[in-house]
Structure formats: C-alpha cells, structure tokens
Length: 228
Image 1: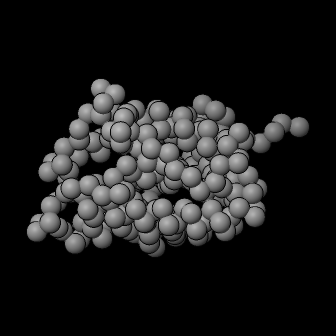
Image 2 (image 1 turned 90 degrees about the horizontal axis):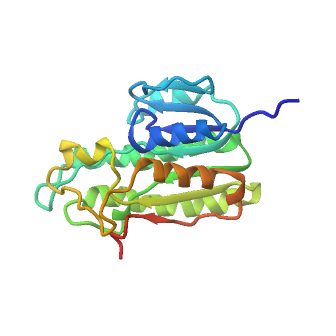
C-alpha cells in the first residue's frame, strides 16, 4: 500500500519565505495547502491553494473549515510597518498584531486538534523581537510569539507535537523592499549578504520532519552574523 504524504498548511504562500517553504516541502514529498491573498505562481499536483485575507477573522475562519488532518502548520505570512516614536501609526500596529499574533492564534487554535502525532506548529518570528529602533510595533508582535510558542509547546508535548519559532534576520524577499519600511532600511549583515528564503525553508523542512522530533519550544536565529 502506498504511504500517504505528510501534509502541511502554509500561510503567506504567494511569495517570499512562505513560497520558499511551500516549494521545499513539495520537493520533499509533502502535500501542501497554501493560504494567501494572491495565488502563487506555482503548479504542482500535491499543492492546493485557498485565497484568504488573514487580517479578516471571518474569512480566515471560513478558509479553515474544511481542512483535514495535518502534520504541520506553518505561519509565514507577515508585513512590516516602521516609524519612530512620535510618528507611530496605531492602525498599522493593529494590522501587524492581527496578522502576526491573532491570525497565528486563530490558526493554531482551530487546527491543533487536526494535527497528527509527531506534528509541528511553526511560527516565523524575527531577529528584532528584542527591540529595534524605529520598529517597536513590529518587534512587539514578534516578541508575543515567544509566549505563544512556549505555552503551546507545553500543551502539545503530551500528544507528541512540537511547537517552534525561529527568527530570521533580513531575508531577501519582497518585504525587504516594501515602501512601508523606508524609514528603517535593512543592513547587510557581517556575512556580506542577506539570508535567502531557501535557507529559511530548508530549516523549516528539517523542523517539520521526523528527525527533529525531540526539539520543542526552542528558537534559532538565522541572521548572517547580525546578532554577533
């Protein structure tokens, strides 16, 4: 009897880190469901896609309604809006909180019961979670993921499910060139280049796979030496 492929749900699947993760998991033999506002330029027999704006709670709820058993939930969708004190935009901060924190909470709350034993919950954080000038609102949303992941790791461990979060530094994606972060342009790290989406995707594939089963609630920084 043919073994069924492992299944994953990946948000932010249309570009950047999310798309790279989808492509890597497909290459490794996974079946992947992608969620994003725009359809990715990707055709694969093991890939399915649903259009959803994760900033909309009702639309997100509807998109999750018919999803079956999973081995991994990967929340890679993200956006950055930057501003210094005195110029902070509360609406921008609320939008980032909804996408990074509330959407992650909604996803995992609804889908954790559908995760198989040895499943994974993976949230993409940021190296800025400890604070960064001009990025306070963004950093706050990424810092909140620490509490979520560690709490979920404690709750899911008895089922053999691990929750992970890792912190890429500046990664060569469209978000790196987003006009919304003009006030805080990225700095090339000591390694001499930005992190590639494929590097983040490769680590995701390892964490989601069977050889990372003993890793739970930990955090890896991928920053090209920027944290040194």
